[in-house]
Length: 350
Image (cartoon, rainbow, N blue to C red; front, side):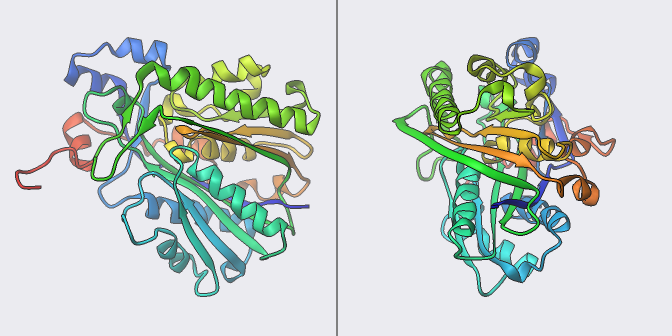
């Protein structure tokens, strides 16, 4: 048995509402709330980045795993907003949790599926017997140009998963990856904000890729959508994951627990992984979980997990993901403070 032995998430307390952004740019807030089903998004504080959020998510994962960090043989952080262009993010995290020095480390990039990419490699190394435990993380402090559609959804958060063969919480039964060269979203070196293909990011990019991966995974596993208790898909907005899930054959009630975008926004590399943590918070032994990520460029990683008898005993060892969304500690920002926090105000010469 190989699978998740510890999991955790982290979401910043700061929020900005869709209306606050829309009023600055003279946009129609109801269209974003109704059409894309967005209400607000998380915003990192000036002292928060992909590394700090990854550390917090990993601490929650360690609480549930109950293992010695020294036994973690690999650390992989997937993100499209690594703080350094050259220095790795993973070394800082490994030092912070006490996993150094006998540890393999790499930073991953593949747009929004960088997190699931790290999860796939971490699980595969454990399955191959190369190490006892491996850590895969999806985290981002997402970027969106002022006034662009992405500004309404580009948010921040992290999810961490420790994979192992002992005391497994959710066994990984099947995986599948599907990708093509579909340039729907990109950011070149030295560009501060990403560019995107507008409606092209949905059809054919997002929908074709996720459905290609999902159908192949179902065929490989000989399973059907009705076999699953939960399903979670990448969440660039609130509408897309529900739409693609229904096209595949899943029902709304199977997707609701992992559907966080309306109150979280698009956490890019952490989107579907954070949704998975929310599902693991409530899943019962025997529940089957279907997860498919998406990364522009374009590709998807699919996983089928089965909750074990051990999961209920560790769910309350760390804060639940939805509690981070619903917490009364949320702090709402005005647009000026938000732009200051996100470094959108550039001084002359910068």
